[in-house]
Length: 402
Image 1 (cartoon, one colour):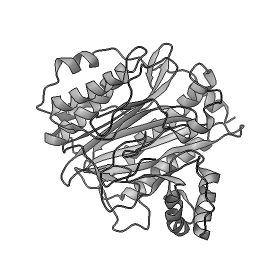
Image 2 (tube, helix red, strand yellow):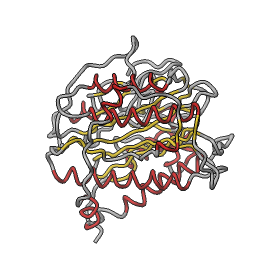
Image 3 (cartoon, one colour):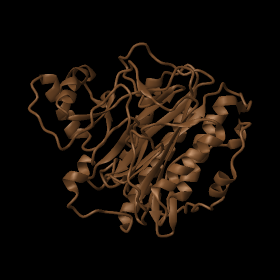
Image 4 (tube, helix red, strand yellow):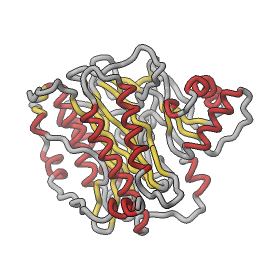
């Protein structure tokens, strides 16, 4: 992996700040037969995972109230995913569960904030906070991820959101909606990058450095084909054309600040097993930690909060990182008083069109910005997206519960 400095560049789906080489899983399994969207069973499982993600997002938006702690919100999101996964495909032995642990990042926090019950001080939500929720689910390794941003309100508060909050949220949401319309066969990743840049310019905000949106594959959350949000001297990606039967994320961050996130002093709690690395660990706590991860999380990111013995996990994780057994997802921040918005959709490139599998809907009437949407952005937003068909994915998954 590339070395990490205080300023972090590169981002994996589900986590900003991840400077990565080729996906470990793709290196290990690249010779195997790939299961894509030409396989109906794969589509069914993607849609089952997407349904769980969307229900969890909706549940968290209802659950989050002023005064509630962030750690409770994260634990609630993870429990919703786990409970729903337990209700499907009961008759078949397969991996299913959390593909990215619930993170709740507030205001100037960009991403990956998923604290532990033991962390101090405890962070609580307040009315007026810009709250970003980021999470993922998989069914048999078929991944659905999503992120959504909202302003936390007191009960019965219906006043419109204005000023920088309205600007940054509308910019991020409209950019994500425009981006998904450009993910179709024959178009390129560069076209998506360009429209995100235009949306940021329209609203007087900035895209965020180091954000990479990956192709998703079975058991691979960070495939090698990527869309970059903000191309600069430090980071560029190869241009490629989108192809039918692939799965992508559109993952958009916008900031009222410079869009150059840094690491502060918040504890890193989200990691992913580097499956191509092995080491004979010395500490008992480290061996416990790696054993739990190998048994429960295979190739997906996880949080220390999900390890039964949190104390042992906190002690053991340091040696695991030292010997490159884990990739880290550090908590990233903009400057104090900056605001960051985040929207992420999972897209299925089906024969009938690009299907928006996950992601919430923003009522734009609630956000009153004095900024004007450019003709270029309007033209992309005017492209008719594929209408999701209420088909049999959920029904097929439900049948497995009988």
